[in-house]
Amino acid sequence: MPAGIKLFTGNSNRALATEIADVLRIPVGEAAVSNFSDGEIMVQINENVRGADVFVVQSTCTPVNNNIMELLLMIDALRRASAGRITAVIPYYGYARQDRKSQPRVPISARLVADLLTATGVSRVLTIDLHAGQIQGFFNIPVDHLYSSPVLAEYARKEYLNDVVIVSPDAGGVERARAFAKRLNASLAIIDKRREKANVSQVMHVIGDVKGKDAILFDDMIDTAGTITQAASAIKESGAKRVVAACAHAVLSGPALDRINKSDLEEVIVTNSIPMDSKTERCGKLKVLSVAPLLGEAIKRIHEESSISSLFM
Image (cartoon, rainbow, N blue to C red; front, side):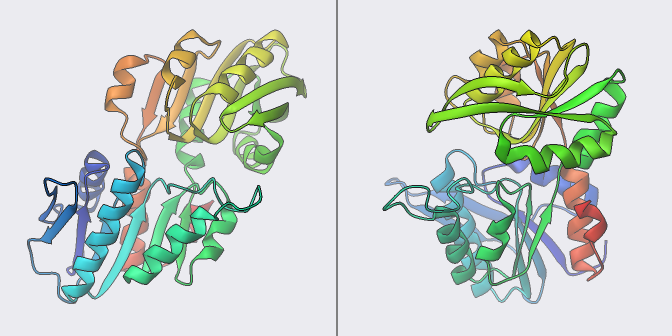
C-alpha cells in the first residue's frame, strides 16, 4: 500500500475495520476511544497523522447516538492533529430513514447528521447502500456511495440455481430490487403492503409470478423483520418453492431474530456493515458476507485518486 494512508476506527465495528486493514495490508491506527464516568466520550489519537490521508471506519448502528458522537469526536481530533484529508467510512448510515418530512413538525434527521459531519471538518464520506440515494445531496462534500449488491449477488448466484424471482417487499424498493434482478437475470415481483404505523406493516398480496420459484426478498435493511417475515408468508402461500431474504444492513432490533426463526424464510443473507457475532449465535438462518474487500478497494482508489465508479455498479 502506498505510504501516507492511515485507518482508524471507533468502537462500533472493530471487526470490519480490522478486515479492511488486512485487505489494505496496513495496521489499524492507534487511538483510544473511551468514556468518562458520566458517559462523556473521550478520544485521543496516539500516533502522528500530520499530512496523512486518514480513513475513519464507523458504522452508526446501535447505540446510534454514541457511535455518531464517537465519529464526530475522532474527526475533530484528527483535524486538530493536522491530518491531510479525513474520509468518514460509514458502512451503515444511521438516521437514513428520516430523509424527509413525512409528517408535520418532524426533523429531517438524515440531513442533520450530514450537517454535523460536514461542520466537524470531514473531507468526504464513503458509505454503502443509503436508504435513500438523495441523502448524498445533503452533503456539500464528495460522497462515494457503494452498493452491496455485487457481494450479495455473487453468493445468490452460487446457491440458488433454480428459477429465481427477486421480490421487493414494498413499492418503494422496486428500483433496488429491479437492479438486483438484472444482475441475476431473474424475474421481478412486488409485495403490495400497507403500513399502519412505524415498524408495523400489513402484507396485502403478491404482484408477479412466484409459483414454483426460488424467491429472494431484497431490501436495503431489515429492522424488526415484520415486513420481511410477513412478505415471506405471502410468497410461500403464493406457491414459491423456497423463500430467502437478502439485505445490506441487518439492524435486527427488538423481536427481529425471533420472527426470523419462526418464519418461512430458509436463509437471510446479510453483510457485516453492522456487527453480527451475537446475532448469528441466536439465529442460525443468518448468512453473513463481508464487505471488507469492497470497502478496502474503494479506500485504495480514493487514496490513489483513481476512479471507483466501477464499484458503484
